[in-house]
Image 1 (tube, chains in turn cyan, brown):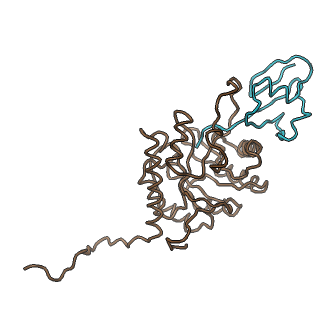
Image 2 (image 1 turned 90 degrees about the vertical axis):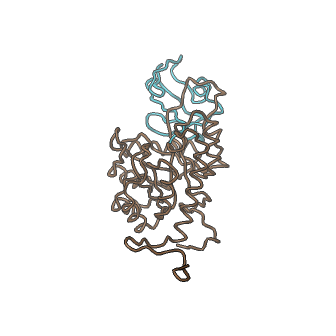
Image 3 (image 1 turned 120 degrees about the vertical axis):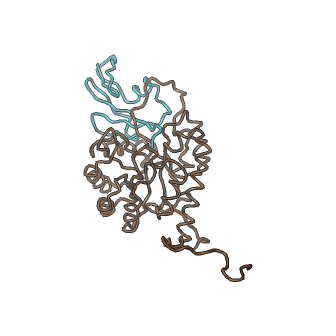
Length: 67
Length: 266
């Protein structure tokens, strides 16, 4: 299964991955971020129960220095 | 305008009250420690930040900007820097709202040209309409065109932020007359955003009657950012006091001695 995360294709075993599993794999536990799946924002409150499938396009964003 | 200096002179934006009229960006510093030290030196309350793809290669304990600037101490102003369309800007700020737990005070900027970073005011207006309708309090970066500024206010933007000169240029205030017209016509705070190079530029903006100044590069790229942040704080305060005090009229062709003309020794 291949998922596009922040513009990079990443391969995962199986046919789907839960949001929780993905966040753990990406070392993002405890970090502040927001997620968009195929152009739709996924609320932090509803991350449980969200799955990512082959071909999904995911954006994970945070705050950086800027003016 | 209440000119009684003894009274509270807070900056009010969308019902929020701020002691400092200096808003500062968090970009271009050498590291987060320097960012934090400069912000502390400026005594600013509002800090801008950009929204970008998270660095997925980072180690789990790598610090982030938000850890250095806790929300209890500062009001965040996420921006849309780098966006060239209203769609991109709206998408970015909706993600920012999700990231920041529903925080809805934002800085909208939609750029029109990658070289000059001049704003695309048509796209800016389109985005402002969508964001205001969606419940955002929109502080909007724009050109120094008084007509566009008024349109953005009429849409419901909570602060108008005209450029003094190009973003990051340090060229200072190039058109004080346009800024004065915008200030005169506006019923919401007018905050100069972009172009300030040194302390006197900030003072001039405030003497013109601006409600505040937003800057990043002038502090971050100074040889000593922490000292420049302190200079900017004083410049904002002195410019504000000079505006409230009301300057004397200029007399172009007649001098007026400060000392008595009577009793001269002959």
